[in-house]
Image 1: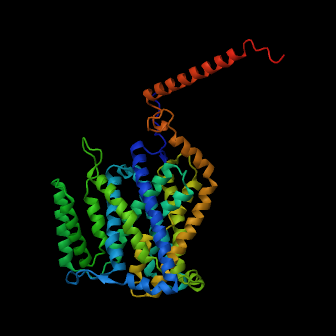
Image 2: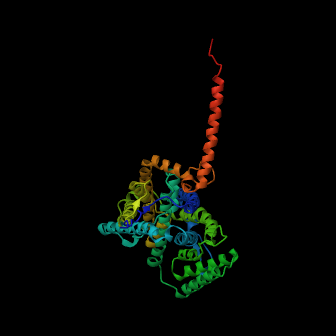
Image 3: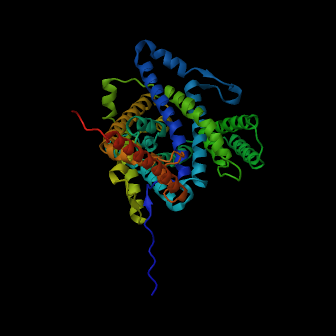
Length: 467
């Protein structure tokens, strides 16, 4: 009788492929620098607003209007940062998502299920936590979406300080999770925070996007073609009533991210490489500078934990994110009969899930949209986002530090390159050429040790010791 077939056990959060590892390393490097700049911008905004002599200047700068009024674009500095600069951020997010779908982990439906389900649960549970908190406390349900977003730049900045030895699989999980999270966040903004539609402007935006797509299909090159067209798409989308950042993610999704013969990078990867520093280093920090400026006092902080709206945001970020992402990951592994990587334990997944509770950029944006017209509540929600993100960061720091020794050992194994060929040895175990190179290295070392032993032995011949 033939032996029964056995399906190999699939591992979740297992070691990355070498190309994926290289891409993740490049992306994380830029996002980490951007996260540090984001943190500096947020601190600057808080200091600027909370020094009485400077507070008025902050308001004057953030509310200064400029732009062509005839085109409906006479906006404040803060408005330009939220609607204009964040479109660059979402453009990069669109490219990231497209690359993941056609060339990355999301290409395989079985592999894609984990970050997608984890991201969905990581958005649904915080929304549920916020809703229950406000139903119990009699607060407004308008801010249910505020704690649903993860700020990848801020989270990676924290990782740069506390998790330098975190295995690449966990880093990639956090990055992919945030990409999916960004997509759903932009869908929430589009569906739930769209004003009255201007159908003429919306039709114009769709037509301009079609031209953008057609030029890409025809292989037309040149920034002088696409940058003006992108500005037209953005302006029409803004005037349509749909949030203008939708234009960014739509154009990002249109770029080709699959490589053809002879290409080191696809056009999407090339453009992402060029634009990501602009997004992480300028667009997002400037948005933070003009969004994080809230007055902080003992009374204001006390209200964060007593008002149902602000308490719901804090609990959603700290509790909802961790429980949702961890629960989604565990359920996916459980019902797909997959097992966790042998190198990791479930507490590692919970620690990274806690880190995803750092919600800043998109959470602040949704907070402004949800409570537009109520400046007091808007400022309170901003303070809640900052407080919840800080608590989540501290919690993740403690959890990750408990496993730091294990992470350092995994990191050393992943980075080891004894044959000095630029490829970690762990990826070459099935390559005969690698083992031949290592045999030559060991033979040279053995020959050197034999020579040293002979020299030491020769030095001892005829040495009768002291008289």
